[in-house]
Amino acid sequence: MREAARIAAEERGARMRGSRGVLLRILRVITRRPARIVGVVLVSAILFGFGFNALVLQVGPHPAPLFADRAAAPMKAPPEPPVRAATPQPGSVPGTAVVQAVPAVPVPPADPIAGLIRQSGGIEPVREVLFVQRALTKLGYGPLKPDGVYGPGTRVAVEKWEKDRGRPVRGEITRTLVQDLATASGLSAE
Image (cartoon, rainbow, N blue to C red; front, side, top):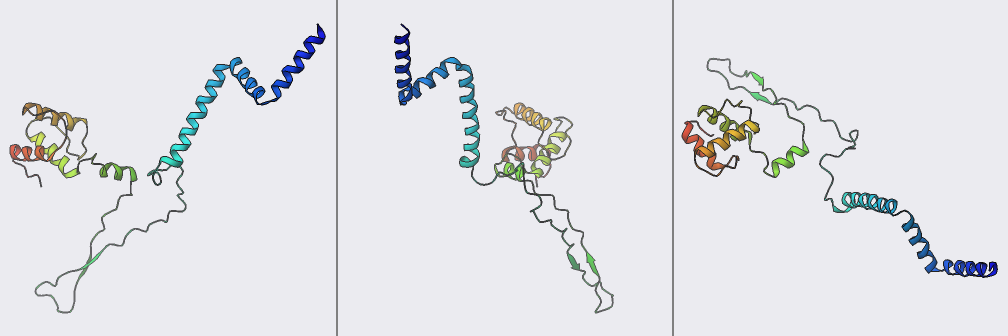
């Protein structure tokens, strides 16, 4: 009996040494801990997906990278104010001109995310929003703070205006809305 068991074990070992034996070992590991194997496969697939997305699917650099090389970016000096020569006043001494410096307008720092939003048409121009806020306030559609930001208060007022006029309620600033508000409020949209 013992001899037969030893021979059977040797035969099993010989079979396990081939490629078929490797597959049997893998199947044995999977059947012992299936939840752990499924978890490892899922985590590996997610990590592979992140890497594939970042390295292959993205076009160009990220507009706001987390690890930007700030030391490599050159510091910009503030611009010099433009100098404008004044026109000579009548009765002034000929050959002398007063030079006046025009104060420079501060340039806000570039915001790549805001630039992308503006390019996609997601933000209305500030002048239109200011006009809409002033016109709606004049027409009695709430006390809107004219700040040029299309926030929830402005959206609610626009939706109420559209509803009162029997139009489809979208809550968006359109050219037609601006023209209608200009006509109704008597304000200039320019």
